[in-house]
Every structure is written in structure tokens, then in C-alpha cells.
Image (cartoon, rainbow, N blue to C red; front, side, top):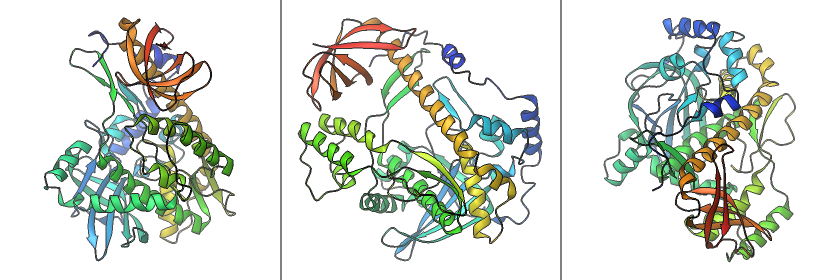
Length: 468
């Protein structure tokens, strides 16, 4: 495994380039501290759900814990109890915290530390669903029938207490050993059911290898493929289930903010079918995009190439706010249905507002005026922060790629050709996992080739390859 030198690398220059904030202003911190002094000030009228054995599933070392769950059998179906951190209990509308959160949009994650949406005293403390702590939360109870469809949804404010903090690999190991925690023992069955339903809905899942940066014991950086367990996917299905329940509430009420993506044009799908043929994949005419992708082996080069091409079908995602008349597009093509963000309010701005809509509607109350006023602004805030987050993530990966490869110019590597034209190709070097451009001729898409590293520019975060 290749890694950076022991001295590691400094992301300070990158932070300065993107003008990332280094801290919170005095007014924001003061408001956060005031909220922490009496974290349950808004506990009046909350349901006491502290008897439910909630658990969290997050990456190792996470402190900003948005979600906790209990999943159980409910007759022939399932009952999902999903507790979401209640940020509105800590963020006064129109205050310094609110304005700063709107400016930031979302938490940005860098290898040497994050740039949080909210001050850590909230995001990693009083608002986080840390184990053993009583926390204000928004509690979703979703009943799912035997077919995997939503049968009933209840949303209210509650007090909860998480009993355990798990990571994905730990949950996977306990399931493999036949000793799962009771709160997630039903997760595999429900997760499989929802994933099967997602394929039937037309959801598009791209299993391209994900690059992950981690630190080593010598202070350097390691670039590797992010290990993905089935627990990752099952856990994501619970969040998607909740987001789809939220979207249904909003659409029925005629007010809310949805995550939308237009369906691809028929000619785009036909283009993808031709791409499948070009990389040697037989696509039966009766299978939809979703059904066909679900049959592919993610580890095969041809599959990787087709996943890369499929990203073209998923362009144009955005946030659509409405109050009254429904928008022209209310669905997300990648999910195969209507969907809204409500499960990560510690890390993402829009979730706080979407949650307040759902709470008001289901309680038969008017949506608060401060929420109505914000709806028209939230999509722009989120689009800007999404763009910044994507650029920062790409820049971090590019920087570590350059650091890792700096001493290996002239070396040969094995790579998969993802996309190609006459003289250039987009490749995935397999070890270390590097996405890059490669010069050459007659690239075989969806196949492995030998490439040579010809140049590394650490300052510009660029690496260059040529076909051997």
C-alpha cells in the first residue's frame, strides 16, 4: 500500500484556497453556549421515549450523531423507530446560529478535521445522540408492511437515550456471528426488502469504488478504497425510508422542500444501452436501468465502466421548495420516488426546515412562519454548499493522490479504463485507488491496461499517466 511520507501533508493551503472558516464568531458561540446551559428547555410536551433501546451506526470515531434506531418485527411487517437530533431545540430562528448555519449550508469533511455546520458544543455535544445521554429528538415511527411499503407514519418531538454507538463493521461482525444487538436484529431483513423494492421502483445505485483518506501512525496519509459492507446499504435504506415518508407528508400538505432529480430522457437510456454493448455487457431488452445495474458484479472492470457512464443519467439534482401548487418535478430519479432530507440536521441545513414542516403538518398545525419564509432561500444555500463540498472533497483526494504518487514517477500501474475518446481516457488505477486522465490511443473501455505515471505536480494537485 502506497502512502505519503511520514511527515504527512498540510491541508492549510487548501482550506485557505476555498476560504473555509476556521472558527465561529463570538455571537454564534455565545448563542450555542446559552442553548447548552438548558438543553431540555423545550422539553415541555415531549414524549418520553427513553425506554426504547436506541443505537447509532456511524463511521468509527464519529461524534456528530444525527440518527438512532430501533427496528422490530410488527406482525407481518416492521416498525422502525428512528430518532433524529432536534437542532431546532438549540437554534433560535433568525438568531446568530441560524444565520451562520444558512451561510455554511453543511458540514465539510477534510482528512485533518471537519468544518462543522454548527459549533462542536452542539454538533458533537448537546445535540448529538451520544450513548447514555438523554437528548431532545424528533422521533419518526414508521410502520412498513410485508411488501416493504410504508403503511403508517407518526412524527413528534421526544426525549430519547441511545444505549450503544456502533460502526458499520462492528454491526456486520455481530450479524455474521449470529449475535446482533436486538435493536438491529431485523435490519438485514428489512434492508433487503427495501433494496429489492428500490430496484422495482427504478432506483439507480452506482457501486463505483469510493476513495478514502485515512491517517497512519507516522503522521502520513493513506489512500485506499473505502470498505463497504452490506450494513452500509441497509442503514442507508432506513434513512431513505424516512426521507420518502417525509416527502409524502410534504406533497400531501402542499408545502415543503424536496430533493429532486428529473428522469433521464429515453435517448440517454438508449445511449447507456449502447455503452453496455461497447464494454461487453449483455443487457436484456426487458430489464430497466435499475434492474440491469443490480445484476452487475461491482468488482468487474466492465461494470465499473458502465457505472461511470451511468452518472450521466443522474445529473441535475437539486432542492425544490414549494408552498401551494406542486412543482413540475417532485421525484428523484436516482431514488425512484419522492424524497426529502430530514435525517441529518446536525450536518445539513435543509433537514431542520423539512423536519419542522413534517412536525407541523402531522400535528395539524400551521407551518411556522419562520420556516415558510426560509423555504425560498434554502435551495440556493444547499446548492451552493453542495458544490463547495464536492470541490473540497475532490481537492483533498487530488492532493493526497499527488502526495502518495510523488516519488513514483516512471512506475507502471494497472488501471481500469472507465471512459475514453481517441487520445485520452479516464482511468481508475487500482492500487493506490486513483482516478486520473491517461494519454494514449485505442483505449479498451471496461478493460484493464498497464499505465505509466509520467508527471506529478503536488502544488497543482495533478497527476498524469500514459498508456504503456
